[in-house]
Length: 208
Image (tube, rainbow, N blue to C red; front, top):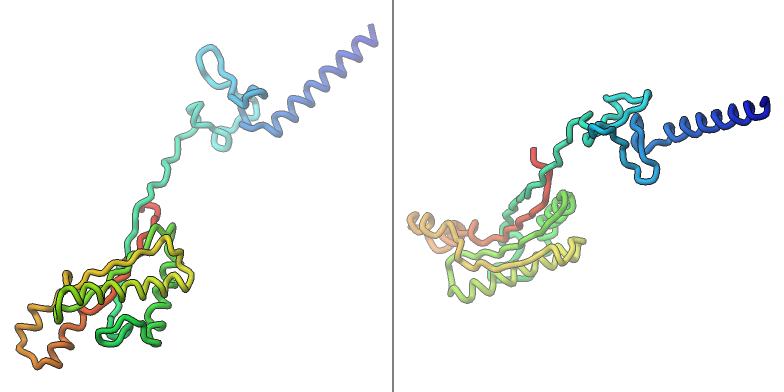
């Protein structure tokens, strides 16, 4: 009889140690969990069984109604557009980058690399209205392509960058400069803002 009592006592102790050990390493602390499925055990009313170690503030589960579900962050697109003067980047009617273009483009490269969850970069070439539209279209395409090549050569993924020529279709200074009755040299200077390259950077950020 004494031997049986010792065996029973030893078994109870082992079970207690096992229970405490399971609780210490519980997947869902504070709840009684089915070890084969890691699912919280429920009573006949569908309520979650809690252990004496349950702490709602620390252990509460949404599935048991003991915690409020946290809303998932909403990601939204963030666009930033940078305008660069063609006068600095290129010679007149040229599409090869000047040496000094580096000083304008390197900060753009840095900004793109800092972009959160970069989705894409669009490089747009623009011209003024002087000259034939077909010529201006080709020139704008070549200039946009030159800037794209610089960005890619300096570490921006090629599959994230596209280039497009807008020609004179988005010239903004034409009527303003015509109204000023300027000499040709000053008129050309007045149109300078139209001769540009615009870089649009699109990233994703958490909606505030």
